[in-house]
Length: 161
Image 1 (cartoon, rainbow, N blue to C red):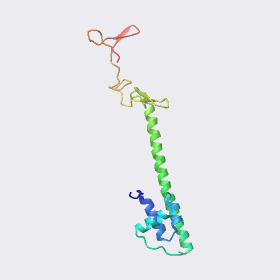
Image 2: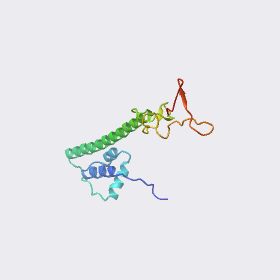
Image 3: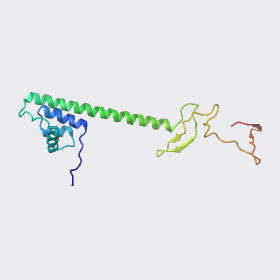
Image 4: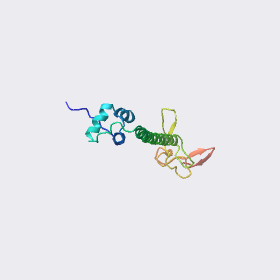
């Protein structure tokens, strides 16, 4: 049986290298990285051939390094949160656009009704002077011999289609 695969991403390796270089404890680095144990941090540091840490690094240097690692970690989290919020906002806008036609030149054909009860429209450009696109334009009635019939509206016949 082989070892279980546990891939470290670039962010985790960067935090490990920064913390190890300035003498942070493996326990602190594992807390910052997140899903890694103290022993995993030590093992990865050895596999990366990182230099021996300075024993008993000066407290002010260590404190500054801890603050920098936390700042980098928080910046990364904020960037991911902003990216997720941007994607969610884009998805909400796209869903809202699909729910109803915009403007008078959009096809009014209802394609489906989603789980929320909202109608999803075709959104193609409507034919000039019509409510539907060419694909969804209602077909005029035909007579028995195949000719296009006439509509009677209020007694007057017309060919409004």
